[in-house]
Length: 383
Image (cartoon, rainbow, N blue to C red; front, side, top):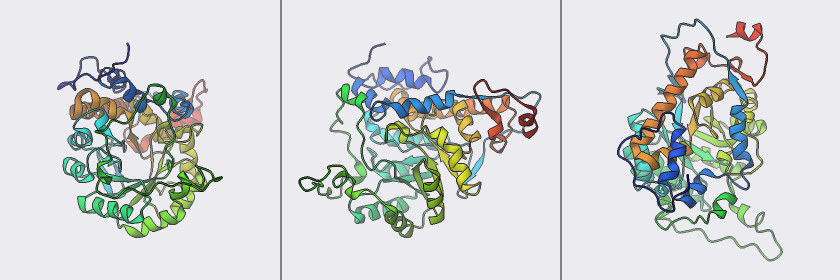
């Protein structure tokens, strides 16, 4: 099927072709103009890390178990002292007006309807206040440090006043790494897609390094956050602070020592450093480093309930869904996003039931195996 140069109208009902959550990715090509689709679907650089995320999940199998009574099964969990009915959060995804005129407000409505936590992006097309009014009781605000510290402080203040329950500081993308895929498609951010949260602040002065100095080191990275900024952030807000973009165990340990509420293992969906490890490969090392007492979430590459199961098995407490929410939003707005979450949840429950897992706590590393691994009785005894 060829790409469309202009999107189809958003539907008011779920298309009959949608039979699993990943079908929204296929259908979205009809509803998103080609350059925008390439921007959303692509990773940074050549997309090496993007491909690695999918390959990592495909390299694992889930071993079914027989004769387990799972009739008391559920997917409830607790994170940072709050109860959640399922482990599926909506990741912060910027500029959702690219795919739907209602943008993040529509996504927030879906989160409220499905009792899901939405993580609202600093770079959203709608203001954090508008999103908060449409969202349910579980909503977090994702923070990009701004070049002006007073702007960052005001974003924190606004998030707390609007009722957000946590701050998610994204630290792995201080530089916007271009996607060759989107560049080749001729993508340019349309005029109607603006960062609504930042519109009332004076823009930062552009950084121009002196002649002979690096445009990267002395230019783009001059305002990138450092450990001092993390310490400042923790002192600025009473809200729990999570850090997103963790892939190295030592970074995880240093963040834990500073008192963050939790970590999000993520390679930005393959949109930061191209060539970074798959998030799923980094996850067990992060969990081993910080132990069981610090919450660890996961994103990058989730397309099914089985993908969620594998991430939970390797140490995640819950997962965040990024691109799939954009695809579902483009097809059927809030209804599509809510339906996508419902499908993912049912796919997870099917995987749990057939693997003999009654609760999320039953999902452990012994329930997943590399492809072509011989199953031994020791694994069976452990689960």
